[in-house]
Amino acid sequence: MELVQSVFDAARNRVRFLFREFPRVVVSYSGGKDSTCTFYLALWEAERLGRTFEVFFLDQEAEYRSTIDMSEMAMSHPLVVPRWYQVPMLMTNATSH
Image 1 (cartoon, rainbow, N blue to C red):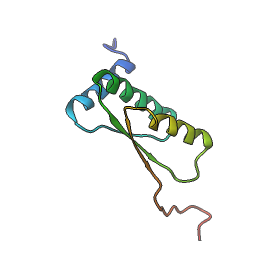
Image 2: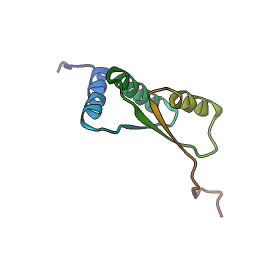
Image 3: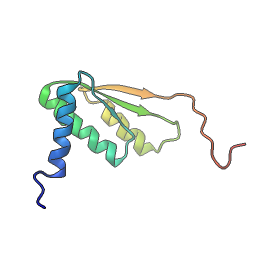
Image 4: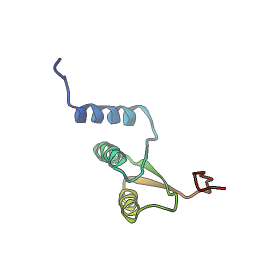
């Protein structure tokens, strides 16, 4: 079976649909490769339309410096409405009492 469009084109079409159908678009950003790709897909569409979009980042206060650097880069773009949150969280793990 032959693909009609590439994965990249399909992703751009999906993001284009979101900007067309919704007045508010929010990208959840972690600083990783998947959310960085999603960020750039949204940024390209926002630039094409002259629109802004929100970028949400949940700072767990134990992030790598490079993650913070990437998040600051994304949040500083003029078309981005930044949503950077640091909220109290209870995270249990094997070392918790």
